[in-house]
Image (cartoon, rainbow, N blue to C red):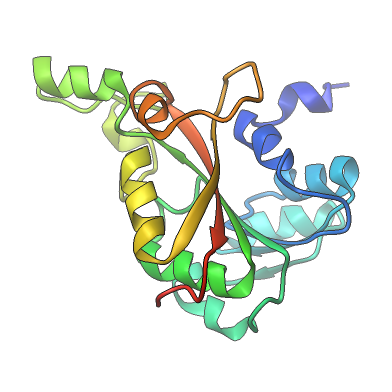
Length: 207
């Protein structure tokens, strides 16, 4: 039997550190529900999912998870203010058509928003652009077009978007880093291939 811990995505394990027992969590772009299952079983959270693809919804249901099929670019306004304690975009924000809208809506729906994403400010991307004029794949699965990131951005880009929306970056974690210490934005932007941001409202998020 496969070890569940060994099969978990690294960014999922990092995200789970920022979720507390009993928290109501909305996982947007929840896929097959692996993160929701982790949050429920190991963190004692109360997760619900929003997933675009029917296949992902079916797999979540098979796991006994609460999920609805929907499009984050259109359907988030149906959720009331503060319906959840935390909202998560796990490698999702770079795939949506309206990232600013989606992030602003999630900041309305929950006071804490956790975002994981591939960091295109990484030194390897910069070096490839400088020396070869091409963007490498951060997923290690081929060329730039295999990453699934419709809107590649850097850690600094994400920080600037958060500030524009009136959100505070309360924690930055470099996925794959062994220790739990919070990384600085400058270090992260150069050396982390995958990043987790924890964002909090400082007031009313700007739509």
